Length: 203
Image (cartoon, rainbow, N blue to C red):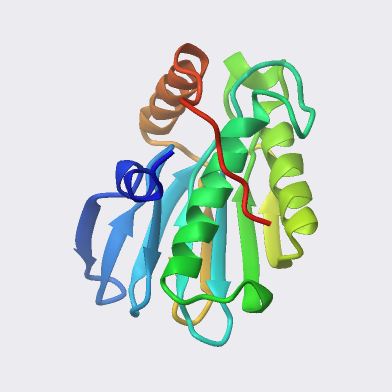
């Protein structure tokens, strides 16, 4: 797999100016990620999906991903399902390293994995996503500075990579079905389109 293609292919492109925080911002959708070396805001909304917010705690280089394991029914770390999570984590970490972040200075904050989609409840996809991301970070030796996983509500995440600050808003009342529709479509894509090629793992 061409690393450059991987970086560009899934890079979030929904940029805007957030008037509340007076910062340049980017919205990270399912299957996307974003990285930055400057002061800005990364935003995502999570149901069953998980986001890892990872940064170099000294340099302030950070990024966010947004992913879901494919519904293979097999939660094993080396299952075909876990390849999606592995790819999402590797592409984020590798891009941060390319920008100058150092693995030994990385810390993570992880969120999501809620039980919010009835159609996916039987497969415990939120729980599997949560277990995967925590296990992955432990294996990689990346400290988890904070986590807010599982539960019954969607979450809106605001990540400020320059400082590491994260704001979490529990969405107790959903005003529309956009999140559910988006995650259902993303889950369907994972089922229909297996990861192409081999994934290079970087220890």
